[in-house]
Image (cartoon, rainbow, N blue to C red; front, top):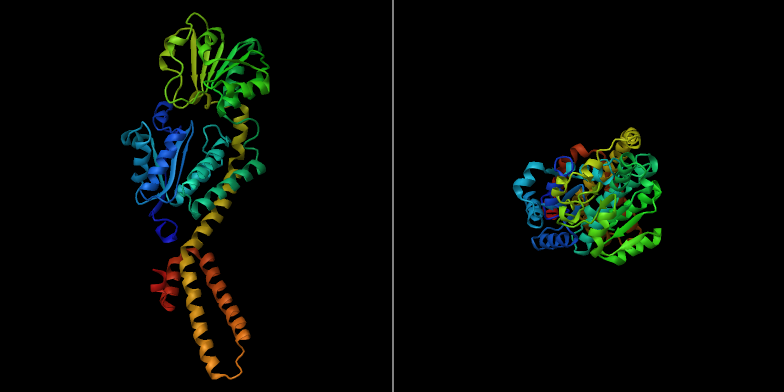
Length: 418
């Protein structure tokens, strides 16, 4: 991207890892809290990076940024997570320039989501954008790119049915319960954690299970009470967690902690219990699997659901790809204009200098020289010349470099554009 006059970084990169190659445990090693995202961005700024976005969800952790080399971004990620460079290299991906641009379009429009049509990532990108902008880490490129991805996402939602029905991990968890638990409306359900996934799961539980035995527990009780008030549910203190687990039939964990919040010791082993862990990193300890009466399901398993709704969405992928291609093409055309903008600016300056010199010459020769008319006519001629050059550079992108070189040579713009 050095030719595009956007950043001090030589190229635009996407580095990251996702559910496709990294399991829940490895994704957990590279997950970023809100605090660690902030620290990562601050370090990036101190290191001279002038354009960067960071996202971390249960399905993926990614950094989009300008750098001399992708290792600058990989190093930042590893320094602010529990992951190592060796682990990263085994499961990660690195995209550069146009490939990196295409990747963010796929991700932001839900085509790369673990559950097809899950548009949760677009809100994550918006949050990442705002966070970076506050630190002065958003340049013109990112402004334009994120807006283009948002536009593509909106069009896909409005013009296709790829997101018809519920399309999230929270919905998948409720679908799993409905398929595998008999008489679900009579079961005791405990939801531990009332963050975004917890809230969405709660809404889906009430909507689809018709269950009046749902209890909420959150470390911060007032958050749980806000949700409980909305749906008329029971709230218990965090100190009551073990007792409530003993009384429940289904435990849904969506706490978002960086270490397990549910261990073997908290569970009564003589009672059947279904546990759904919707957290990254895993918030339910693996030793829970040692208990005979307990069935533990993680979100990776839930996301592999292929019910009729998900199968139906697949038929809209070609239409979604067409929309992405159209918006992405517009963005790349804008990017090309960035490439020749300095030359066009320098050419305009040179033509204005030539015009001023000529008008001064004619002013001395002609006694009743009309300054106003001469300025109007000459400025219009410059405007038309500039339009022709700009249109040529936009329309014939394959020869842009050669055309720029020729313009610079003919008008002797080398010094101006350096």
